[in-house]
Structure formats: structure tokens, C-alpha cells
Length: 114
Image (cartoon, rainbow, N blue to C red; front, side, top):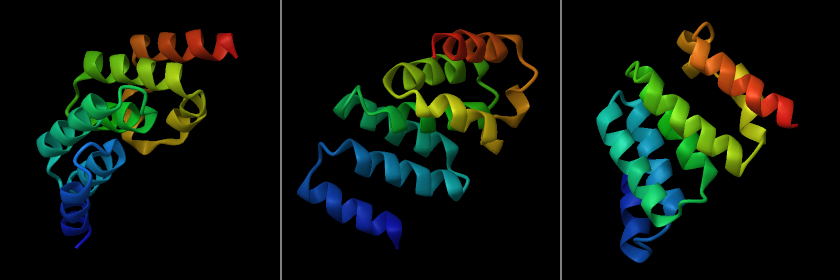
């Protein structure tokens, strides 16, 4: 139902990044990770400063074990909105990265800036 609502909203405003991001999230929850990545990429095309899309796409990349893509998107999300630095430590989607050196370095760099 939520996906249909997103589709209706996109008919009204096909440039609203949050709608693409929300639809991507709903699809991710249904296990459609590639579709979720595609939609969050579209959200980023619509608004490159929409931090939530960068963060969500990082989650989706993490679920596919695409560490470099995940780290890159997390970095951009952190640059746009520092709240995500704290969020990532609590987010189970990044559990598999907790011991990754690139992930640790990224967190250290941004935590040191605060």
C-alpha cells in the first residue's frame, strides 16, 4: 500500500527526493535491495543534499557487502548531516562493518571533527 502511495505522489511531484527515498526503503524491507538502491540513487539525483538518501543507500550497499560504496555514501551523509554519525553506531544494518578498518577510520575522522 505504501509503495502505491509513493507512486501516486511521484505522479504529482516526480522530483521529490524524499518520495523516491521512502519507496526505496519500503522495497528494501521487502528484500528488493537492487530496486531500493536504484530508487535512492534517483533521490540523490533529485537532491544531492538529501542526507537521508545517502545514508539509506549506504545501508543497502552494506546489506550486499559492497563496503567501498557503503563507506563512500556514509561519508557523504556525515558531511551533510552529523546526526548520522551517532545513528550508524546503533543501526543494525551496519553490524557487519563494525570491525572493518575503513569503517572505523571513517567514524574516527568524523567523530574527531565534532
